[in-house]
Length: 73
Image (cartoon, rainbow, N blue to C red; front, side, top):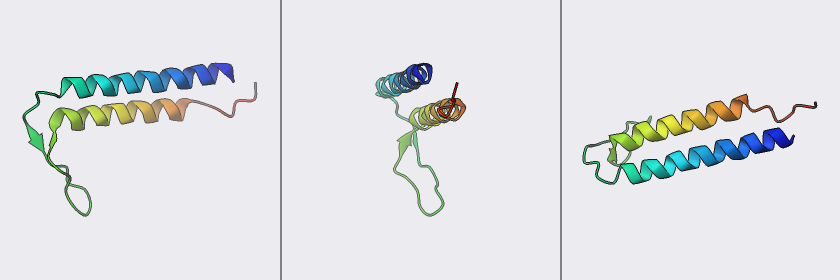
């Protein structure tokens, strides 16, 4: 259980640090696009933000799915 807790903390710390680096990196981004959702559009967001958030959410989701918290060993 201690190993899973350390791994969970590492996953969250890593993805939060990626998010902070993304926020610093998109400060001078000028090209913006809208994302078409099912019912309406979003506000104009920088393309680098859209790609970065997609990468971070995929990384977080993939790591949390592979984390087995119900391991009884």
